Image (cartoon, rainbow over all chains, first blue to last red; front, side, top):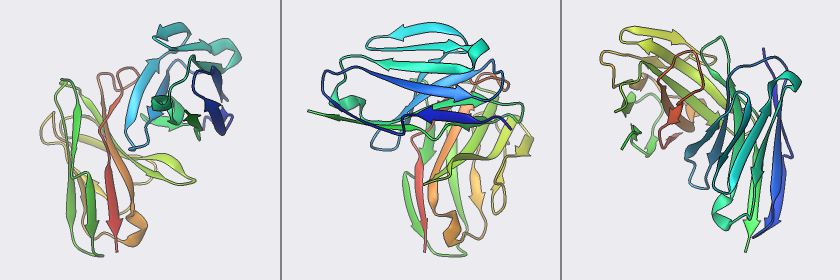
Amino acid sequence: GIQVEQSPPDLILQEGANSTLRCNFSDSVNNLQWFHQNPWGQLINLFYIPSGTKQNGRLSATTVATERYSLLYISSSQTTDSGVYFCAVFTGRRALTFGSGTRLQVQP
Amino acid sequence: EAQVTQNPRYLITVTGKKLTVTCSQNMNHEYMSWYRQDPGLGLRQIYYSMNVEVTDKGDVPEGYKVSRKEKRNFPLILESPSPNQTSLYFCASSSSGGSAYGYTFGSGTRLTVV
């Protein structure tokens, strides 16, 4: 099946710093979603981004489907950005295949 | 507010005592699914449903049952829970059964089986 790899696995930032999270996938996809799992365990839908670039406030995402990667940018990070960021692709098995996540800790 | 509602949020139970985790969505979504999340194993799909009365197994269906009698509800049933079913469970729904678009998760149910 398709493999989804995320990097880095862990990231510690000072408040106000910028960061880039990467998601590589092993096969062509036309569905990719970024999620944020907050410290309370809730999974929040950030972007549906099969290709191109989207922005929402301090967050933006870019997917280059032909090169099989997606990037999530967080600018001017805040402590509330802490948590785990997952990318996931929807497969023909009617399921989301998740990467292993990037654990982000933003320190005040 | 569009949402997926799971209950309970936390549950501690004993081995063998049947339990049901409820899931309800108010978005008129046809597709619903259950996942479990475990350290080191990530999120794995248990069951999914493409529509009323249509359900199918995911990656880890053993020990679980589901039903889809109404479009909005998709309960997860553990008929005889065991400690290896201790996990964080998520229900999800989507407007499109063939896409990640609009995939919405519930707040999760943390289950402990002793």
